[in-house]
Amino acid sequence: MKTNLLIIGAGISGVSIAYNLAKKGFKGIHVVDQGYFTNGATGRCGAGVRQQWGTKMNCILAKKSMEFFAKAEEILEYDGNLEFKQEGYLMLATTKEEHDQFSQNVKLQNELGIPSKQLTKEEALKIVPHLNPDAFISATFCQTDGHLNPFKMTEAYYLAAKKLGVTFSFFEKVIDIITENKKIKQVITDKNVYDTSKVVNAAGGYSKEIGDMAGVEIPVYSENHEILATEPIEKIQGPMVMSFSKNIYCQQVPHGAFLMGRSHPNVEKGHSTESTWEFLDHMSKTVVDIMPIIGNLRVVRQWGGSYNMSPDRQPIISDTDQLEGFYMACGFSGHGFMFAPMTGLLLSEMILNEKTTIDMAPLKIDRFKNADQFHVEKSVV
Image (cartoon, rainbow, N blue to C red; front, side, top):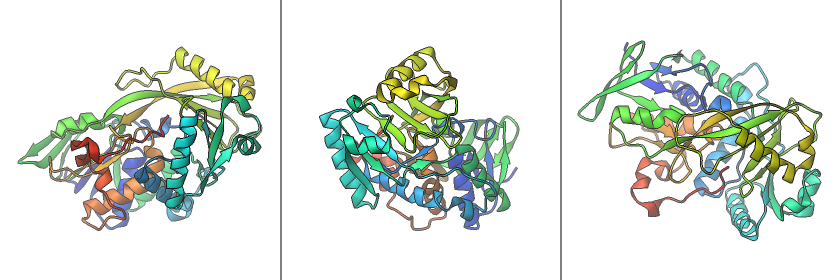
């Protein structure tokens, strides 16, 4: 089967890339995924979208993506409700060191046009009154951060891409990539053989394995991060509440349930998406410490999802001199959903040899050749 470009992975990054390329007139795009629609990291994420980051590049990606999300229903002509709400993210500082770091973060964010601000404890309690005042010392807040339904947002991209001629195959697993003289010849799946010279690796948690098939060394790995959902109740909380030092994020979604997640400091690398009693125990204790009222709610379900981690916790959006025609959108470190609009735009510009909207050097895979050339993003749960 002949195709001009094969995208591996039909999560939100893959479909955003497909849509942006098709919108620019690129023809012959096919997307394959080893599972069902949004079965990977996209469909297992915490549904938050934020601009409060500690590195310049993540701030820029998030701000420009947020601007797209605000108009996405109109732009993509989506006949539905994406459940986009901008009721903010409230970031809690629990130590003097974290307070000082947040001060630097807000300064950077404001310089880039992100309307975040640092708050006293009393100001934070006015925004979320049920916070435990003894659990934090200060906070930051950005009103334009918020929530977006990952299933509906991905569907909007998917339907728009299909209208523009993009084709999709689900439950089709890539098993080999044939190269010759540093050029791509074929991609072999368990159902088809694709003759193509261009491949986009948007395989989420399996990005390293796809790179290995192509002979491209990608310095990423995957690990499981867990989330739970409670029963729905009447609205009591607008913003996402997040604490890096206490390792938690917690928001009330539009239908009333609370979603909350955390990382595990000793989690093994791999593709597990199981959920554990240990997670439930730690999460329960943490959320009750920060917001005691949540302790009255019943847990409905819990699950795990894959973070594809990069060395600096910032994405790899890049081509490579290791293999001509091979492009990557990976290493999002748990934040591919909220960066998807810019991921699609930037990779489409790169593939079409257009001038990119922003300087791509901080996102290129070559940055890892020298540890002095990249800065680690610390604002990650």
